[in-house]
Image 1 (cartoon, rainbow, N blue to C red):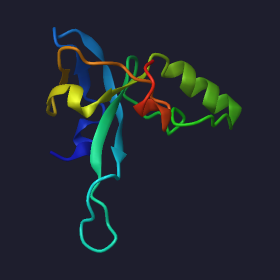
Image 2 (tube, rainbow, N blue to C red):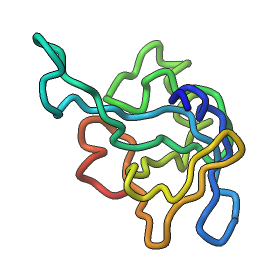
Image 3 (cartoon, rainbow, N blue to C red):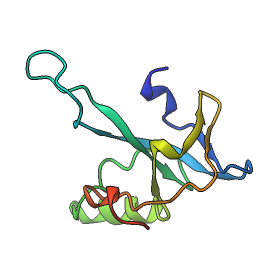
Length: 118
């Protein structure tokens, strides 16, 4: 499966309740060198929006506030968005992403999203 196949995929809780849609993926470059100076990326987690499958356009990652009208609208549209770590994904396919028991919701802010709960 290609990671982009997961975009706009419904996300479900372990009990099957709908939680939202995958709107982005968070990758990290902390692995071993993959020949030369390249580092193999790994999936850190998925950004889940409860209301829409459209992109956040990166506005969840920092304090970007302009253009102000667009920033405000995207923040309102994606309120409740969270990051779920890849380790908390039980299954992922083109039909749905199902989270594991005990999954945690993290802030999608970057880079703090890896350390702070929402």
